[in-house]
Length: 81
Image (cartoon, rainbow, N blue to C red; front, side, top):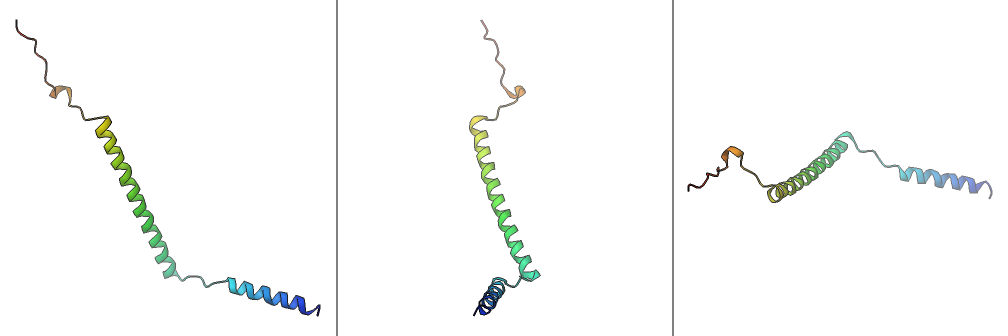
């Protein structure tokens, strides 16, 4: 009986290890999955950047409106008496 316990334990451990191993994806599957991840990240970056640019544009319009150049401003002429 004592000899059976280590053998059973070894058998259980071996079957657990074999069950835990799964087949590695082949190159094409791995490439496709990675390409999808990269595309999703790129779309998220584009969306984040667009939101930041929209926020900055709104801030510029509200807090720092465009000023005309000094040459384009009307000059004050002294009033004639």
